[in-house]
Image (cartoon, rainbow, N blue to C red; front, side):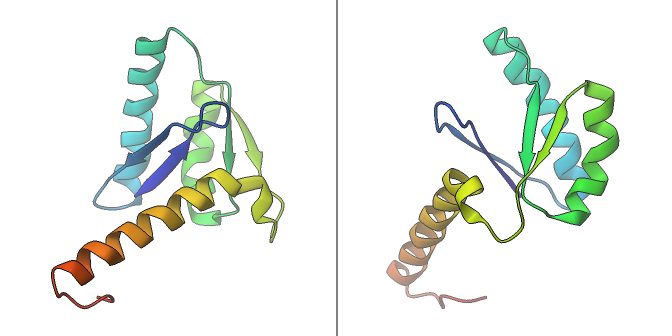
Length: 106
């Protein structure tokens, strides 16, 4: 799973996949869809320092002409909107699990 947050509008998208390779392909498909719908081109992507994801995305970003921006390690303020969105989703999931009487951890 990948979570994308538009820094300007705070609009959030969740990209799903069975594994990281699926997520990378689904990100590429999402990019084409969003660019076609909006008429705008994605020019930069900010990635938290997830080395395994960066390695997989590096070639795709270069092919698509997208600039990669990395956050400074141990500084969540640069990735604040995404972190807040993840925290909100986790709280929502916990509430749903508790509401159904399921264990909170699996």
